[in-house]
Image 1 (tube, helix red, strand yellow):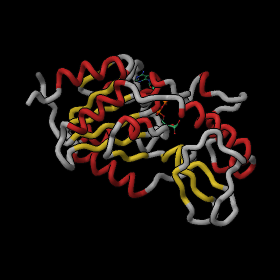
Image 2: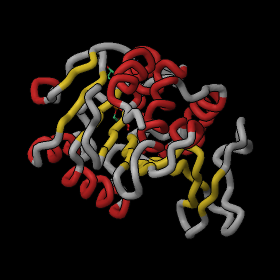
Image 3: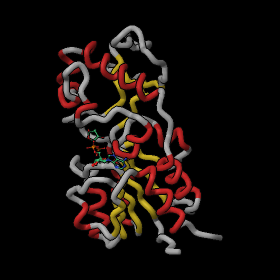
Length: 239
Ligand code: APR
């Protein structure tokens, strides 16, 4: 039994939701009507063709609504349950909401949420899980302008408060789990780098090698839903 040191930071990316069936962003199943995600997930695309961008998000919302959390999401809840107050933070790049559905509580959504909508003009925001949405783009109930998905698009900045919480956790964490992320997209990819500089024990769970792989203490090479439960059985506190 090797008990892990706290505080713990968990960083997740699209790979953790793969076994739940969430369509990925990159790669072949990331294509939609021959558009790549990078062509649609931008403020410029939304300004030019809001209906098209919304059709794509509506398609993603419908697909994600059918997905359930998997064993890897559940292990992360178990880790949070086993830690004391202030000793656990989950930073996710995923917008699918599966961590919250699994029961994770101290979550920071670095790239926002596909279930949150906000007005492009006024301060209206809402949680909206209706699928499909009609009409598209959805009108703002407050000012009549458009609502947009509450996600961070390419070229947009991340929420300062969310980012600060994640960076503070990266500086103080003793153990960091990096699960299902290509470690290519910054600033999220900087979190494990900072933790490594502070001497944290970093564990990467990913079937493929990433730019982070050469620097981590442990690599679990395979699907998170398969490997993470076994890893946790070995490291969970027994009392
Ligand atoms: N278990 C663990 N990891 C997996 C699994 C699995 N079953 N299947 C795939 N992976 C790994 C892949 O090898 C890849 O390294 O998950 C990673 C997914 O990488 P990306 O698709 O680049 O996802 P992510 O790192 O979350 O992307 C970051 O970029 O696309 C934008 O804003 C979007 O939040 C996203 C960000």
